[in-house]
Amino acid sequence: MNKFEELKNAQDALHEEIQRLAEEKGFVSEDVCPIYDGVGDIDAYLQSKLKIMWILKEPYDDFDDNNKPIGGGWTMYEGGLSHPDAWKQKSYQGMTYVLYGFRHDLYWADLPAIRNNKSMITELNNMAYINISKMPGQKQTSHQAVILYYNIWKDLLYKQITTYNPDVIIFGGNFSIFEQDLPNDQLEQMERIGTDGVFCDIYKYKNRWLLSANHPARFSEVFVDGLIDSLKYVNDHMNMA
Image 1 (cartoon, rainbow, N blue to C red):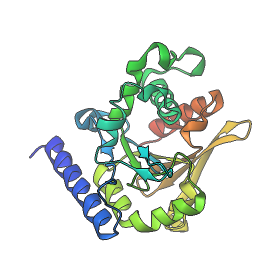
Image 2: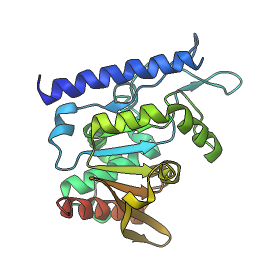
Image 3: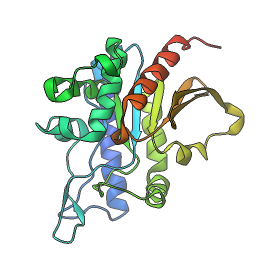
Image 4: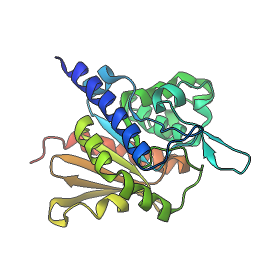
């Protein structure tokens, strides 16, 4: 079995595990199913010069008449990124500008606008994209709610990290939640990149790089260029002892 088949089978198993846990917790109903995450283009991910994972808080789909989240039953890369209006979502835009800039050696000033080049959004299929919660949620989530989701899904989240084995993980405004479970003596801050109050903190944890950044929906020139520089820093220091 080659690496593609191994990761494809492992991802399918993870989706089944997401479904089982959601059912065990009583989250699944006639109107609500999990929204599965992971990697869209497994071949491209495995061949990336940096295998990048991005962790956000929770997905959303639809809402009932009482503004209660409903929907699900699809994957982030098939149901979300393939939607014709996906390029309009702020979170997708922020991530796309960073990945496209890093992979094409461009900074903010020279990046094409997504509205003029909508195919740029496919950059997101070449990374691992996971949410802390796997259930349809609100468009904005409190920090307290995210901590609750983390405690529910924690074991599965770390299993996803192990399975996808990224070189670098970008935490979109949620690093502090994971940090509490990382031994201090194994977590080393390497660099801080940014300005104007928008920083990316770069950590080394065992053989993996962790980037603590803002949520990508809050993207700006400083955010995008700072994360591009952070990924270049990681790429340049991959073989550091």
